[in-house]
Image 1 (cartoon, rainbow, N blue to C red):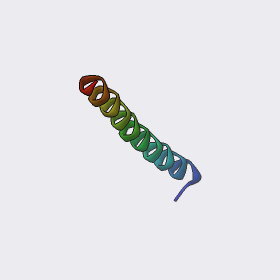
Image 2 (image 1 turned 45 degrees about the vertical axis):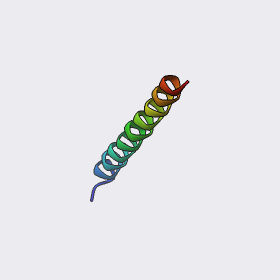
Image 3 (image 1 turned 90 degrees about the vertical axis):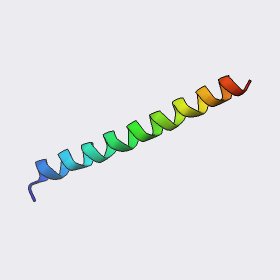
Image 4 (image 1 turned 90 degrees about the horizontal axis):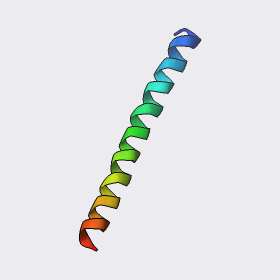
Length: 36
């Protein structure tokens, strides 16, 4: 695999993980705001 492809795959994984973490954080904020 070319280094460029490996870097793109790594960026895709990082973006996916970031999106999941962002969604989880938003969910926690919403649930705590609604539960308050």
